[in-house]
Amino acid sequence: MNRFLIAAAIGTLALGACKQSRTSVSNNQTQGMTDEAPVDNLAVGGTDANLTGAAAATADQVYVQNAAASDMFEIQTSQLALDKASLPAAKTYAQMMIDEHGKSSTELKAAAAQAGIVVPAALPPEMQARVDALRGLSGADFDRQYLADQRAGHQDTLAKVNSYLAAAPAGPLKDHAARVTGVVQKHLNSLEKIK
Image (cartoon, rainbow, N blue to C red; front, top):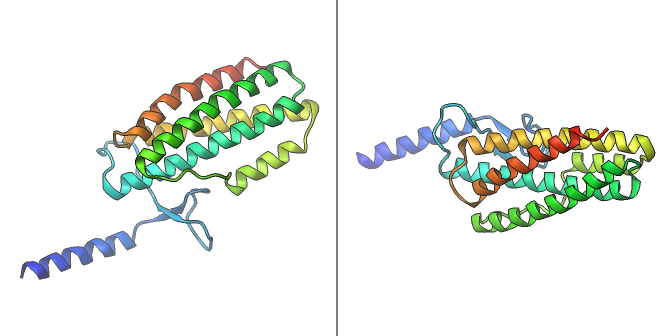
């Protein structure tokens, strides 16, 4: 009798899991025909308790992917800015991005290793396309697009980090995320001073 109840409970949970919405990590839209690995939709924030088990592992993986992509994007676009920006303030800002996102990237790799998560080594295609587009610009056009990309990228990163922090379990990745929020806000504040 107990085996029957256990089997029935497992079956019910499996069916319920099949009905959950799935999203793609890189574009966060309902997954259709794609070769990207699906990730469960996570209700982060609200009044729910901290994530546990598989949901926490998935949230950690998504955080690592997002943080790594952000660091790589900021570093690569800022390396371009050192060569192509015409505004001295943009070049100073770019060097700060390289230094601080380089440090963040090193810290992320250490935290991810403790959590047993592999850090991606390449940008997602849509971010690589933005780097490539920026590479084709120069002068004031470059400055304008670089600063716009920095602003949008940092705002997106801050929202994702805060969402992760709202429900992430204690551990090295949550500690990393907590440190990152202040740095990202500082970068946004610095952008406001560049005219």
